[in-house]
Image (cartoon, rainbow, N blue to C red; front, side):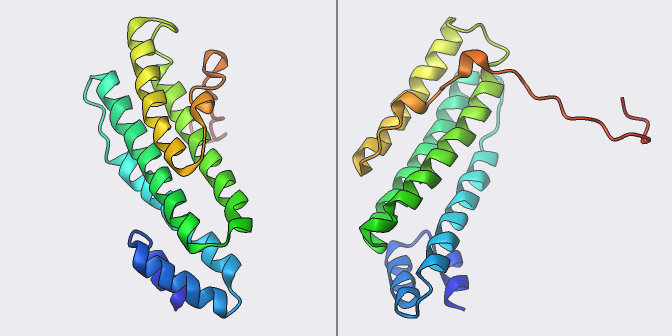
Length: 166
């Protein structure tokens, strides 16, 4: 029941701190950590889906990078105040996974632009600028943004056999 409450109120630092404290006292610190980070991933994905591409790639990347890096920033900040320092490595791993997810979206969106061109450069600059939010909570992931972007090749999904798809 407390885990469910944590999942429902993960965006409220006071309630999160209280719920994590209760779960820690009951010996469910791992459940609290996993539930909190999972709920925050859900928030990122929900808010990212609310960013609508309307023809201006620069604006879309600005919105998307703002969502990703601000939610990661807020999550790490809350995590630092709710969980003991030895658990921070789990949060850093989670943050890196979210940055990697952002990079996949970024690569997909920039695949139609000329690498090093004006639009590509503006989008990369904006994403890197937003990634600086993370330095406020002790994470320096600026070099991870756009990592391996030049080597990105879209992965084609295999079509199901027998369904008339090719």
